[in-house]
Amino acid sequence: MTVLEQAMIDAAADPRSAAWDVVWHESINQGDAVLGSERLLPWLADACAGFTIGEREKALVLGGLIAVDIVGEDREQYATEIAALRALTIENLAVGASDERMFVYMQQAVLGFDGDETWGRQLDLINDGEVGVECPSCEVEQLLSLDPTDSRIEPDLSVPLAARLHAEALTSGFPEVAATIGLLFGHCSCPECGAVFRVAERVAA
Image (tube, rainbow, N blue to C red; front, side, top):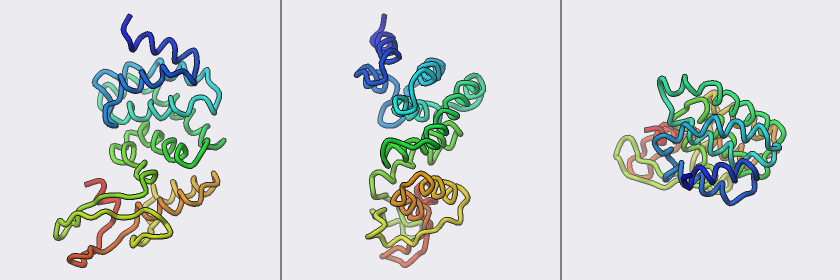
């Protein structure tokens, strides 16, 4: 039996087990899914279905990070499991995340299950409180604050995804997350050349 196989047995038996850290380490490397980790999705779907809403948060986040890297025929093969995990994540969001950081991870997981290759990986920039971008005009790199009380970004919710995420955050009682979403999808001017650009577009680039 491999280290991962034993960890999966232990993790499925206890949502608080340290074995989840082993599963995470074996399947995710620097935020990207390890080749072949999509095979964990059926196991994750079964495990999460047996956990309570509060117990399955970490497992759902893991599922989202794995799912976002699945494309083509593999996504079709695991469509049932992806849909099941997405539904559980939506249920968690509706009931409420354990804290605002986990709420963002839950939102990111949904986008991962949806196959959003940008925000299924990078929505958690909200938790970092800052974002590094390059000016599209002069190519100067700059670090922008995502702190609603101290940012030169002008908030913008005109993009449908931004409006949806913002509304979810307000409904769930996380106004600071909602404000930060507006900044992440907002626009600002380059201090070097004055060019105005959308932050989200530079993240996606």
